[in-house]
Image (cartoon, rainbow, N blue to C red):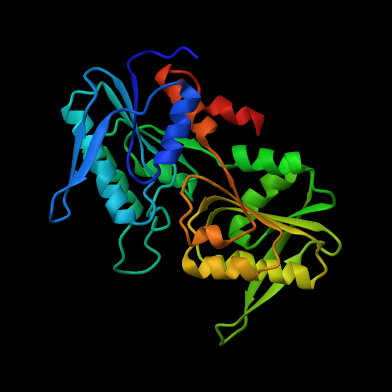
Length: 317
């Protein structure tokens, strides 16, 4: 694959394996950079390649520990800017703080906008991200944003499985758009778990709208964090006579609470992508399947570098 020699790809420390996969796809080495810490914990980064006038990409998920990885990304961007890179793209497979995107009560921050401002100020000329949790987050940036969808990877995986008697279930009303897209692409039926609050109580009654009895179930979302919603929905559809249950998510945040819940849930398989690396704790979930987004990211980087269309990637969904 021919690429301009002015293309440079660097990796932070949040997900170096993914960065290596992307570089292997493009046939390029990972850019040289030394990341170290002062004795008091302050980070220092030194770029070891010549980047003057080059098109530079920094791959860094702002996953746990979020603040440390975010600060590392900001320093990386500033370092490239001061080294006279021609264009700097922040490649953020998982964008932390995306869920804090509005003031839903008084005296709270809109942290997603704050982080977007920090990334721009640090020196990014554009952003490449996957499933920002809410599409309107693209508008929080004052620079171009290329927004990829994990559906490109997850959809292909589940389509190749050829799951018979498929019903795609939205575990809550907010997930309805994602569920309806998967149902259309995979040729399955659609059902929704509706949560109804009982007056004067915090207890919620759950009702399924749609047919799940005797059906194989697929539930997909952008993030699985505590897995409370998906596990309660899985129990509900199982109690209603569903057969096998499959779960997919772009970002496997997977807190310790999620590991326990998913391990005990009646779920056949959980497919997540490698936007966030699995730690030793999450690897305990024996039914988890990790899918790589490296080819998708690599193709997007190649197209951005060549000033070609990125949106055409979605034509294959």
